[in-house]
Image 1 (cartoon, rainbow, N blue to C red):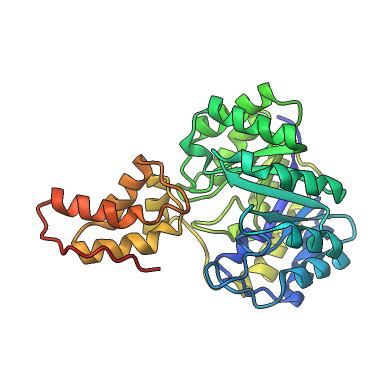
Image 2 (cartoon, rainbow, N blue to C red; image 1 turned 45 degrees about the vertical axis):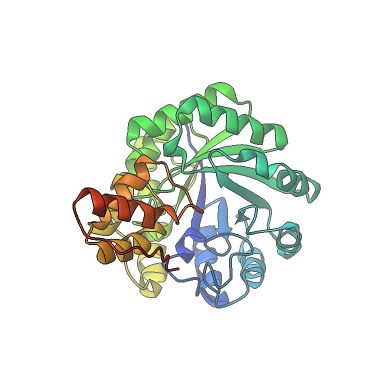
Length: 345
């Protein structure tokens, strides 16, 4: 195992539980602490990436571009990154982010849709940015299929491609197999992004590192979507114990998590009943509320709905399946159902 490059995404993935309400002062404090502790890359943007501040995804309290600018002004050594999802973020947001100080752009697609990212990688390179590809929901496809998608991102100009366990559904051997497959097929770096829905964020990250991952992610105090992410301070402590600490100040990160991030958190993400259901089923956390509503309406356990959606490999944009599945399960269980097809956003 080698020392990885760490990207802390407290100020992006952590934006989800924060309901996108970060202030410039909070960004300044967190970036200052991470930078002082030796974290080399700090991701800052709306939880759903550039352009995510909207009625659909939730409005940011302050402009993400102002937050990016504050982060860049505050960081002494760390590089500032942002996430963008084609279709949510556009060329306009990419150019604005670069002008405000973003140095690393992480371009995320479904793990079956890398082809939609070609123009975004091209523009990022024109803007002089380091580029990272994110293959989201990577647990739904086998390693060889992910290799094909990763090669596309590599051909578009990616400097690194990440295996992203969006639902927190992977087991350690699954994370390792996917990372190893990319390492064997690409000439660029490979990364891994974990979620903790099954309590395996640190374990999966270590499995990815053992398989050769060059880059991995964390969030202070695990602050991220679902049950959260691999906690940066925990990851630093484990890497230090393993003798592969990439230059992180373990105590400083522990203090940042305890005294800077914890006091502003609305709650502590952890694998509770709902989070476990998401990881067990292997679906996006955004499906949970809709599944609960459909389950209540038709007398079906929401977990049964989620498991069936996972079996069908449902991804974002296929929320209309939730009602279909609920109706099918209700009929199979002998439940009387009404004929309406109403989908509540």
